[in-house]
Structure formats: C-alpha cells, structure tokens
Image (cartoon, rainbow, N blue to C red):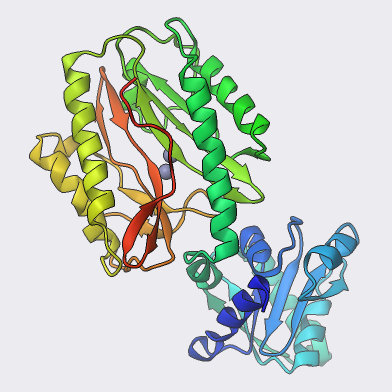
Length: 362
Ligand code: ZN
Ligand code: ZN
C-alpha cells in the first residue's frame, strides 16, 4: 500500500465515530498530506469507497500526475459539482473542516446544496475539527525521511553561518546569510522568517532581525528553519561573539540543563503538560521560573506549528511516531535571552533527537 492509500484508510476508519459518510478536505496542507497534490486550489471528496480531487483547469494535469490515488474532476468556481458528487456516492452526511472553511464558503456550500434537486437538500453538512491534523501528528517513514532532510539542511546552514558572525554584523545580514545557506543546501524556502535577536532583542522570543549590530559578549538568539518538499524544520541556538558575561553562563547552563532533562525524560504516554513541566521544573528551581514565558514545544511537519502541543494545560498524550520541538528559554528584559531548540521523534517510548547542530556556547 502506498503511504497516501494508508493515510486515506486511516481517515476513513474515523468516519463511523464522526457519523459521516464522506469528508470534504479544503486545507492546503491536509490536501497535500492526503493526496500528494501540492497545488494551492482544490477539494478532496473522500467517501468509504471513493476519492475525488476536484480542482480547476490550472491544476488538473498536475493533480493527475501527483495524486494517482484520486479521480481528478475538473471544476469551475461554481459549486454545482458538490451536490452532484454527493448524489453520485450516496453521501447523506458530509463532513467539512470547520477549522478551515470560511463562513462565506460554508454559505456557498449550503446554497449549492439547496439549489440541487429543486430545493431539496441533498446532504447534511457536518462540522469536524482536527481530523486530518490528528493523523498528521504521527509521521510515517516517508515523512520522517523528508523531515530529517529539512532538519539536516537547517543544521548545516546554522553551523556554516555561525562561524562567520563578527562584532558589527547587523542582525538582518546574519539572517540573509542563513537564508542563502538554507537555499544553497537544497531547501525550497525558509520555513519561517529567520529570527536573529542580539543583546536586548534576544529577550523578545519573536523578534525577527533588524538593523541592530552585534556586540561582543552578548547573547544572540538565532531561530531558523528550512522547508524541504513541504516539510519544515525549526532550530534555535544561542551564540556569543567573544567572551560571554557571568549572567550568560548561568542562564545558558540552566536552559541547556532544562532542555537536556526534557529530552532525556519525556516519554510516550505523558500529557503535553507533563512534558512541559520537565523543563519548567529545572528553570523554576534555578530561580528563573517567571522568565520562561512560552510553552516547551510544538509538533512540526508540513507546518512549523501543528499537533501535538507540548504546553501547560494540554491533556492530550504524546505518543510514539509524533515529532515535536523541545525549546525552553529564559528572557531577561534589557539584557537578552537564551533559547535552545531541537526536534525529536518519539520511538519505543522515548525521544530520539533529530537535530544535530552543535550546542556549544560560541
Ligand atoms: Zn524555532
Ligand atoms: Zn519552534
């Protein structure tokens, strides 16, 4: 069975509990995950025994090549094909992605439905949330290989650029060198705009990269990622040019201890909150608890941030096959901050680290 057929099978196995006969997939990444089609317009209409990819004339040829598990139907902007497909496959209850469909599109689905068969509604629209996303939290072998490549690209790009950072370099110059290195390593793009936060800017977890020039001895937080055949990496390292101050050493050692503790101790079956607490406890005990303001990590794959969520108050369990980041940080307003981020996969109940960029202090 192909990876795509396996994914479709897993999706279908959820129809009964969701009380649906079919699902209409509209989200770009879910469509790609379930079909292999990378175009940015189109619908998947998946029933227990049918799979149709409905897209417009710009994409039908590409869809035929990329999604051999699907019948490709050419559609126009009008939605008369939707009640026609429901009638063809005998669909009475059609699930849709309530976390993706706009109110406007839902109104159009409803209008198309009531216009069919002289005003008689052909099917019922059933809102669903997180259904393909729940499958995507578990990576199959094909996905893990692509994700590893994306991670390796980011690791190599970071290592190459880190050696070149000098006092007086602007943050945005460093970010550009990272972007060039990521593309030269074979990535299709960055997975998100690179963060280079130097000195006080390192205290802002989502600072981008600006005109500030790097100074000696201060922390520089670099958070970056590559996108390779759809799969995103996400890597953070904190470096210093020259000799770091005493505060840096203490903060860095605490963040590193928290990160390594979480990597060594996280287990399948823990909730997101329990995993988050592994690192948070180390930071609390060092007296920096208030300064770790974000969550420990997030799932990663076709999107930089996806399920599972590794954060306080998350009761969903982490399970074998899931990939996620472990990225504690400490941020001190006016001084700077330290964050260290790796990607792990849970295998045989424990974390295997997929990121290999060095974690030395400079
Ligand atoms: Zn990151
Ligand atoms: Zn991250």
